[in-house]
Every structure is written in structure tokens, then in C-alpha cells.
Length: 294
Image (spheres, rainbow, N blue to C red):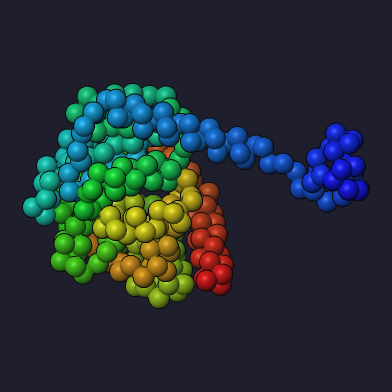
């Protein structure tokens, strides 16, 4: 049918006919709608952050904490946060990942920079927002730590030392090189298994690839941010992406504490293990396909 004939019948020339509509993929409006809602939630959080802290400047070290319903634990973590580490000023930045309790008020009352998301987007998404803010503010280094008390803020300087001494670009805390005060043998086995898997894939020598206590040069984050997609269980994606893009990975021994209170939001051992394995597989496939395309 010609374009003129199509127009005469009130149908655009490129509109699918009934004949080939059988092969047309469904319009994935659900995915687009969720992406739009996600952008809206982030825009709301960023807008409120700017209004709450007009003209604020973050320090050379930004300690990013993604917090979801950690009202009983976050205050103690913030109270132990050092003002300086490795002779550099430290600015805590809490990203409240939605939730129904008063975690946001705990952070605001503590006087730290706090961005509040109106809905839960996942730890990975919340951390990406923290990375973006730190980069925009000109920070030199970013440290991430948990809101549940398992990481000791007093050890923050230990993670920064290899970066400052130019021995690494991305440093991970290791409970295996340090001290692990938890008693879950299955989690410990999982830590060893996934570190061995990533070492086999990447040619690294990590002992604890799944630790959320990490330090980065902001140049690393600026480079890998476009390739980060995981909204949860982000650690494996970070390690694989940074290593395959040529950044130097390092480890330091630290102390791993039990949660101060409450239960992990990451699910039981089997669920967490399966999700962590999924992230390894999907990230590695994505990296491999990107290399092939290049």
C-alpha cells in the first residue's frame, strides 16, 4: 500500500498492518512507567535535599550510608563517624531509601546531610544517588558503609590509606583478613565462594568481595557509574565493572560486627546467595558482550 493510500484511509504510512502485527512485540508500558516513577522519586529526593541544604558543600571524603528502616541503629553509627580520617575532612551523607519508620528523622536530627527518597528503590539505587552527589560536589574520595552497625566508622582511615598512597583505586574491607565477630557459618562460606568465583573470572586475589565497606577515588565512580544497573546486591557489579575497566583493587583488614539490632534486609542465606550469583552472571555477561561489541 502506498503512503498516499494509507493517508487516505487515516492510517500513517509506517503503521503496522494486521498482517504483520502478529510479529510485533508488545509495547512495554509497564517498564517505562516504572522508570518514570523512579526518576520522579529521585527528582523529589534531590529537590528536597537542595531545599534543606542550600549552598551546602561536601568535604573531600564523603561517607555514603544508604539506610532503609534502620531507626534503631543509624544514630550510633553516625555518632562514631570521625570528623577527619587520614588527615582529610569527612562528610557523612545519608540516603534514606524510603521506609515507614523514623530513620530519616534520626539522620536529620544528627545534623548530617540527608537525602530522603519518598519510596524504596533499593540499596544499589540509593548508593548511586550518593555517588552522583559526591562527584557533583567535587569530593576526592567516597566511602560506603552500612547503617546497621556492622562496619566500624573508626576504621574509615584504614580504607583511605591505600588510595592516598596511590596503591589502589578501589579498596574493599575484608572481614577474612581482619576479625569476623558474626557466627553464621553459611554466610562465611558464601563469602569465600563468591570471592573465589570473582578471582577466577577477574584474575584478582580478593578475600572478601561482598563487603559493603568500601572506598573509592571519585574518578573510579565517575567512570563506572554509567555501567551500574543493580538496584540491590550491587557489590559484585561494582567489583566486576571496576576490575574490567582497569582500576586497581585493594583490600584492608577490618572488624565485622553483628547487626546492632533487627534483621538483615537482604533475605535469608539461600535467597541472598542466589541473588548474589545472579548479579555475578548478568554483570559478567554484560561486560563480555560490551567487549565483543568494542
